[in-house]
Amino acid sequence: MATLFRDKAVESIERGALEKYQLTYLRKSVESALKTPFYQKRLKKAGISCADKIKSLEDLDRIPFTVKDDLRESYPRGLLAVDIKDVVRIHTSSGTTGIPTVIYHTQHDLDCWTELVTRSIYACGVRDEDVFQNMMTYGMFTGGLGLHYGAERLGSLVIPSSSGNTQRQLQLMKDFQTTVVHATPSYMFHLATKIGEFGFTLKDLFLKKAFLGAEPYSENTRRKIEDFFKIDVYNSYGLSEMNGPGVAFECVEKNNMHLWEDAYIMEIIHPQTGKRVPDGEEGELVLTTLCRQATPLLRYRTRDLTMIMPDPCPCGRTHRRIFRITGRTDDMMIINGVNVFPSQIEQVIMRVPEVGNNYQICLTREGALDRLTVKVEIYSKLFAGDLSELEKLKAKIRDMLKASIIINPVVELHEPGSLPSFELKSKRVVDLREKL
Amino acid sequence: MKITQISVFLENKKGRLLDATVALGKASINIKALTIAENEDFGVLRLIVNDPEGALQALKANGFVASLTEIVAVEVEDSPGGLAKVLSVLNDHDLNVEYMYAFVEKTENKAILVFRFDDIDKAITALTNANIRVVGKKDIQGL
Image (spheres, rainbow over the protein chains, first blue to last red):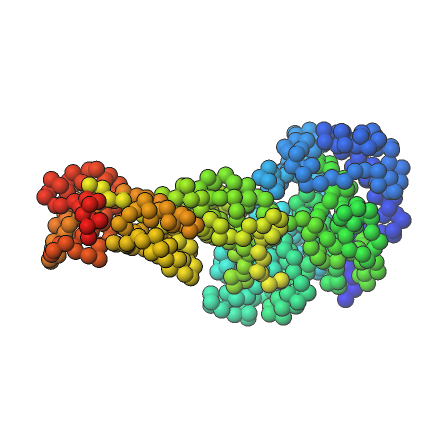
């Protein structure tokens, strides 16, 4: 199959020209960053008082890293580089400690983001005759709106079905002959198990492709889903701090993800030393935005572990590919596609006087979906002997957790001292899920 | 006229009820009546014993979460309609029963029932006025 490009000049740009382009836009990003209170301080301290100080791409090393805590501490406006009247949308994500992070977008920013998504799904063969059913949550979660606008710009018929309501999803897929879906891998498994139950067969579906993301999954899972639905599954990578989806995407080769280097400068660093590692070696992905006006981020540490694939892709795109994400450098959990930090759960538990400070987080899989169980110990002095009070307490903790982490957990009450008490936070999480 | 009940939080885990009764036995506590209210992951064991304070200490010393609650014990005729008679008094006075259970032992031909009310004092007055005997602490110890 001949490679088709959405924008051949950009996608197959020669390396030298790309680097020249990156330098020009890195300077622009530094210039915008210097308009934010956060970077004014941070960059001046590093001796970068104006964009002219960046003379080559090597000067990137002079720029200090930005981390998620910086975003949190700058909430709400410390990283805003434009006048608020030019901002047309924000996306926030829950922070590790309850304080969210925010990304502002101008119309230009949204246009760039949308174009990256359009380019990505075009590279996977989506065309204007396709029917695109978007089963990702809409709203603050960037996965929903990001793909929605990208597919719309491409000219596909977009069904904004959002997540959940499996029966309706299947009905829509049948009635409108959906050819492409966007979902989490676990939701695709869920759909597979529910088809018969809701009275559908594979013959009712017209599906050709699925974009699966928001959760890590293996080649084995991809193959299982492809075999079951008789479709092509494409992996993608994105994070809310870098807009969301459209950062890196597979092409029709289905062999690792092209990271769009006209929009981001990527580096892979050793998580402890911060030094860059050679291509082909695993490390933490660090990204710098090149086309974002409202919230430029310089050398942002994603905490995601991956590597740069050293060899070129047969598709002809020159933007280098990254390997599927192999892990995290922090303790973030991904539960049904939602990012959750154990510290968020801990913060909620600390606010409940009726339970002690010891807790355990258990992750299991029920059918195809993840199940989060939070085990807490009741505090003996506040036990009144009433079952209904305990039920109310469970419901209260569940509601508080739901408000903080968006996921509905199962709350279990235990006797004091019955849960293992750990010195290390990471041990509080027991993940019994089979790897997807 | 109020009686002290002891409530114990029990995880839904093998052997927990046994552990609780062993702890009480070792402390020479005699169980007079008991009931368990439970849901899928935990239960509350409710006990009437000869020595509630001693029981509380023994349970806590063995790592149990327990507390004392005031309840009302009532003599009911051990014949058809006996319970209905008591309940109709409560009904007439809009007294809401949170839960109830029965003693194993009886006094002569009377059964003893344990009630937990929102408004315990109002309940005692209503029952006494209706000539229903409310059992005291001494009566329990004598059983």
